[in-house]
Length: 360
Ligand SMILES: *Cc1c(COP(=O)(O)O)cnc(C)c1O
Image 1 (spheres, helix red, strand yellow):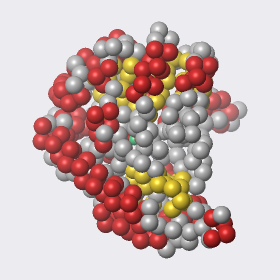
Image 2 (spheres, rainbow, N blue to C red; image 1 turned 30 degrees about the vertical axis):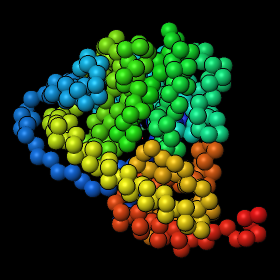
Image 3 (tube, protein in one colour; image 1 turned 90 degrees about the vertical axis):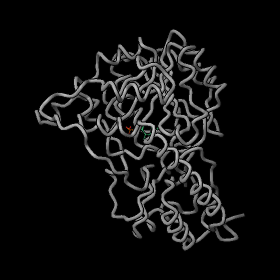
């Protein structure tokens, strides 16, 4: 047997997550991964690298619990929110039997993680306004153990209606976990569902330091849930999921000064987002600009593949969302520095728009 044939069938069939880094590019304006555009400096204070780290570093857990307004027992820290997505599948889904449900267009890791564990992915496309199709979810919920809902949604940028979350939570009660992926919640903090944990034993909230905290390279994320869920996840997590330097830097990022600095970054990004959206409305090749509660903007663009390629060749790297359901012609642009936004707008202005006849 060839090595390929030795591998599990679902792994052979798997397409790995097409991360921004994997897709490559040779740019100087990176607006494809929803990162913060400028590096924040930290110094290491823990030098005891001869010792194994704490599994769940106490200071990080305490500071995150305080920041999120939950109890320390309701917090799990992991190697990014992506690991949280995976731990939920490993702890709750029986391969070949249970299913995961999510609503495209949305984040790509829900399907990649399910497929890697041979867990069925059930998709219920969103409505035309990208809100949940609750009747269709009800029809497909049989056998589902984990439902992922990204809010605000990546890549569309809008919040899911809180009332729809309530209906979904009632529908799933006693049957499945409802996971609210809040990777971008710092850009609209009032919308968090963390305050609902006491009402719903099956609610899970995912968070990350990769976006507003400017620490994508750190690989640190959080799962907020009731203690019963956290204890189950603790059974399947690696013994030492975070290295000592990661825990050290995460604790600093979550200090009062760290949180203030994060809020200042958010305020600055929101100003740049307003500039970017207003400017996009005034560009010939831009057909539609969607509102955003996040640090990225989705736009529908004439001949989007050619535009994407042209900007790529100029070193401006955006994210092509054209393949996602209902997003034909759409590119996602991370809100960068003001200069990066201006360069992107200038490059887009050089692209042809619809001609009068095509526009009819
Ligand atoms: C970026 C992102 C994540 C991953 O966060 P990490 O902590 O970097 O693993 C999870 N969910 C969504 C919706 C994201 O956009």
